[in-house]
Amino acid sequence: MAVEGSGTLVVGASQAGVELAAALRKLGEPGPITVVGGETRLPYQRPPLSKAFLKGELPEERLALRGADFYAAQRIELVRGEWIEGITLTDAERGSGFAVTRSGRTLVFDRLALTTGGTPRRLRIPGAELAGVHYLRDVDDAVRLRHDLAAARDVVVVGGGFVGLEAAAAATAAGKNVTVVEAADRLLARAVAPRMSAFYLAAHQRRGTEVELSTGVTELLGRDRVTGVGLADGRTLPADVVVVGVGLVPHTELAERLGLACAGGIVVDEAARTSVARVVAAGDCTVVAHPDHGALRLESVPNAIAQAKTAAASLLDLPAPATGIPWFWSDQADLKLQIAGISSGYDETVLRGDPGTERFSLFYYRGGRLIAIDAVNSPRDYMAVRKLLEAGRTVAPHLAADPEVALKELLRAA
Image (cartoon, rainbow, N blue to C red; front, side, top):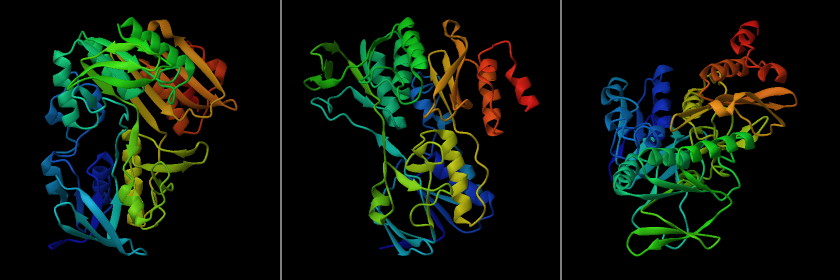
């Protein structure tokens, strides 16, 4: 059995994995760095897969996070097309050990980082394995979906979250008959307030998408290929293509085998350290305790980047860099939603602007203090509030509600 290397091993060629490796070099780490990923492609961006790439507006080569020359220049060994089957810590105090890949390679490490991401949650109903049923996580998923959409007439999207609505918007814009089926009583229920959910329901309906709320899917119909979707109320929707977007299951198997604490993700502290202090984790696979919001798993590019930089600093026993306010975006048709802050636990919302114009913002407050913003086609509101939140400032609700009040001036005053 070939035994290779030492240095830092990053398991997962994700956004977090690449950023962590890059941060190690930037912080002065001179030793070997190895990043292992299961896909054969260069590590790439995932958010465009349900947006510009799905619509054919972004070529595959522009998805790459970094060019091949970056890894060579930074002396980062990128191992592609390999899965880590097992990890053993030979010295938990130092965080050193070895990993074995599916092909039998043994990778020795002095430091370990887990950036393993997750996989789409699967439907467990009759017909779920039929051809024409799609999940959207990697490039191959998006390519297959784009191919099937081209020939489809009726499309059913299961799940009214961000991925589902982005895919629905793309299919509707392509002239398909699209129905979104959501088990909850509103769209984006886990992410936004009811007022914002109502706006997105009306906006998608105006663009021609049908929406079924408070409705479960009990079976997918067809022999070899899907032809319909059976609903809990007994109705059947015709479907040439079914897109499933019902959440992400974090990859925690390796962490669990290592004995790391896991609870809906790999549990990490604010320094991105796992329950074995010399092992770090970052990205969609992690859950971190937030002082105001409890345990959080944030699925976003900005969080992956920030957490990766923190993890790199922890591996080198350096102070963690300052972390900004969490932020996120979603493109659905010509609607750009930008979110800054964490809105969970809010007790008041304030509307700024007119939703009828499709250009407005919703401010979230808790105890009279601003905690987050959802901005639809309102980048100035978004940027001003994001900077205010990062500065630890707030905006009085009556000022937030007045579009004549320039938030930029409030920021300057702060």
